[in-house]
Length: 427
Image (cartoon, rainbow, N blue to C red):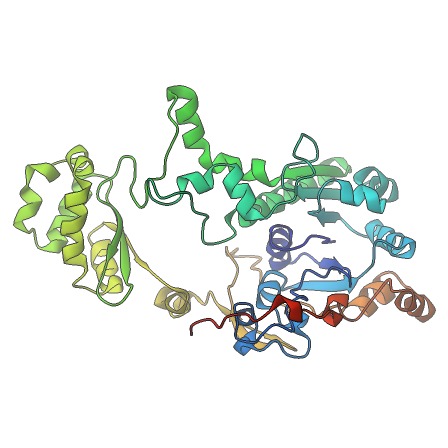
């Protein structure tokens, strides 16, 4: 059962759903987490790009691309947990569930009357994972955050970018995805423990503590040497050349990383062994590292003459680590991913038929698959409440009349005209 919002929690349950777990998303009409605040904004603006063809449609909350990608293969119900009846129904669901996932701040589930001791009383074998920014205790426990805040608080932002230009955030929700991976692993570990012992478990996952080990080498450098790491741009503390080099075409680039003198000789051979490669400044790794400014310019004079895919293939064939820098359009057309069938076509009743990223790994005997599109708002109320819980039509009607369940988010009715015009995005 998935009560989580935004990305970290839904990403964890997406991984489990892709491998066959039955995930029931629990949403509230007052706070759906589906982009319900966007429908009246100008189509084609910065938020319009999150909808198919830049069109919010009549029910934008069912067309929001961000939501639909991370919530495929799941069911969805609506429950208002601020109402006693909603809490009572959720407890009935807990009785037939294996895992409860939530990523509220620590006080929220207790305020609902749904913290772990209470849920354990309902189902002694239940596994509950709480994914908060800073954990269930400590002075920051009630601080709210998105991934960008976590990346800043673990030092990633200070390590990203170029020297003397200020910190940068990664281009994706790095902390959310990392925390989601940790959560999925922790859930599987708890399920194994329950299979061996018959006991449930509670998992306190701090996003900050899940992401901090990613800067472990810099922590140890400080602990052992007293050095505070600074951003290095595209360079590496021990490799040279190591960087992102301009290739032929507008905004076209290639990444090259050379870790040994043997790879350097192979690289020089691909370039045609120009005379400058015999310069003493580039004779070994240390010399190349100390003269990177000159080295990078000479390399870019060569790479800028060729297509980035062409150079990647030539260098890889020579044993040199290289990769074309792709934008999303190039990624979708990448011949390797196309041959492996990574992108899968999935039809959504309101968002249409589109390609989606496939599964991150492949198991020979039990391969996962994209079975279901992301659910429409409240789509599976009848299935979950009626079939799984055996509730009567009278009970379902009562929940709807009391606002415990809903067929559309309440935010849909709000007037957001005060937010003003949203600028058009470039095509």
